[in-house]
Length: 105
Image (cartoon, rainbow, N blue to C red; front, side, top):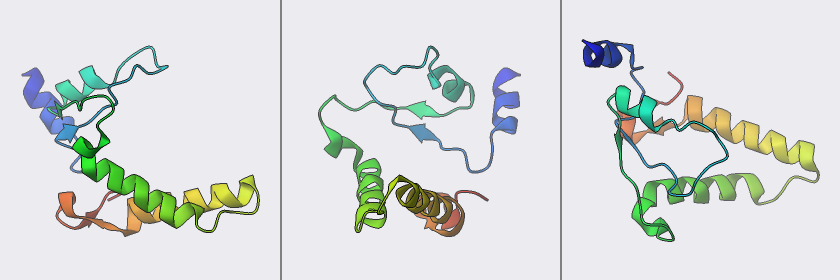
């Protein structure tokens, strides 16, 4: 019954797989147990091998290209660039893994 309830409560845009950092975090609790309850498979990469997670690295390249070239003149302008990127990435840009739907839908 718990699995059925978890699957029913999972948002339509929830991932089916996660690639958490292999390094320890500052958080006292891990999202891993919550992800497992939602039916999300956890796959780990070897530390120091970012090529094993190319999609994530590609997102970082896009983030860097669109928000730091050229960089904002001050921290407020830079934060605005990051906020604009997040808005476009989450609500306007289609994602192949979501059947070309937007993440924020």
